[in-house]
Amino acid sequence: MSWASKRKFLYSLLVLIFISVVIAIPTYSALNKAPTCVDNKQNGEEIGVDCGGPCDKLCPSQTSELIVHWSRGFRVADGIYDVVAYVENVNTKAGIESIIYKFKLYDENNILIEEKLGKTYVGPNEQFAVFESGIRTGQRIPKRVFFEFKPDPEWKRIEIPLDEIVHISIRNQQITDAVTKPRLKALLVNDKPLPVSNIEVVAILYDIEDNAIAVSATHVDGIDKNGTQQVSFTWQEPFGVNPVRISVIPRVNFFESHK
Image 1 (cartoon, rainbow, N blue to C red):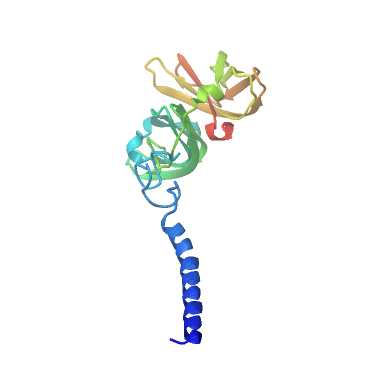
Image 2 (cartoon, rainbow, N blue to C red):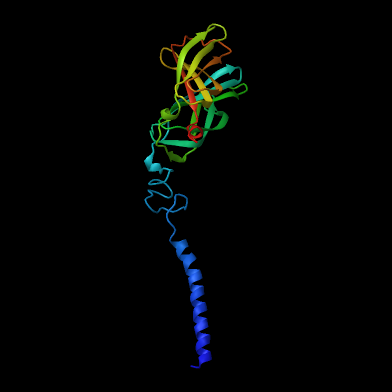
């Protein structure tokens, strides 16, 4: 082989090696990426695809389903109803940042009258009320209320208990004008040395057999650290029976408070 041929061969070999390196390094990097929780693969220490193990997202097998204890409708006026569902999350270290729910109202013939969609959040180890107001039913009277969540929500791991971030206690509950237009007053107390904002508050009244007989809701913009805020709930008509138990349920979005 002549010197010119050898030199041409050497140049060609160097070019080929350069091209191989340029292609091989990115290819190797692409094929050997470190496992992440957003790569649509079950890898590393994950239990499922992008869930479990080191991931904040939990796999379905790691959580228990939300428990809907009861759902009910309450007449506000002719053709107008409020509805509420009482729900429990038994998962002490898991919550849902956003979940869609649906109320369905049926008449005495089990025919659907109206549906109401909404969205909420779920804190760890939380018992809470989902409330929707002013549902119009026309001339039809709802006899049954069905409540459900959209299946397969995205559960997230939560290591910090909600009570460590925010805790609101209830004091001085008092019902007035029970035989005309009932009003319930209560005092919310922020037990933590941090301000809290965007508080949903639902009040449920129960009879002697512990059946819910009335419900109402309000919203509080915020409470200063170690501060208080009085809230009021009103009804247009008397209850019919005397309430023997009052449950005032304040809710604060864990995911907003934890940011």
